[in-house]
Length: 295
Ligand SMILES: [Fe+2]
Image (cartoon, rainbow, N blue to C red):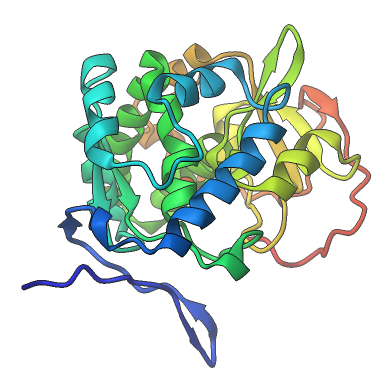
């Protein structure tokens, strides 16, 4: 019998070191404990109350269409039936963080990897790596949106290309993912709304990203985003705002190879930067920021 592993970062003298898993696993649904289900329910309930008026309509619609609720951890197999009909995406269970090339291959083939295990009760507010709640609640609802679903696949294809070109190209593409899929905001008639998975799965950042005067909120531009470093240890210093998901998908249309070559000639921008040409929604006060910890 094979046991489905839980692969986590490890604490070493150098801090947390990512440990990668590569295989696809069946979701061991009957092995979840009562506590696991309670953690899902509590996290779900908290975000469900917080996100109306904060998350974009497409995300909230996705939560509804999947019938996500506080009735315990969802079964991937049931969500896959909804996804197959809507956009042809499929969730696959994974044991932890994937190496870049494996991750890109999944996306390029419309498979979204979801970590099978969920955080512990004492990790409700912060976890240093993705778990089931982040991957599923954060990412999966938007896979029902056809334009966003196509963007994710295009990103996976772009990732495979960048991986072949080299680490510099990969770093720039990773910034695109970070500032859109994970931490993106969208401009709507009702005001700025959240679509990034890293935000919608975090109570604190769901509030901070819209309400705090500290961060910059700047209009999305492909090369601007690819040039900008980011924070992995704190809330973001800058959020990039798209007009709609078509803008995001259109941005991935060109071949990035000449863009990578061009950007290689320029220094990376600090996460806190505001440039003359930026479309500034709000210029942050920078309150509470450390100055030297960009990734
Ligand atoms: Fe994520």
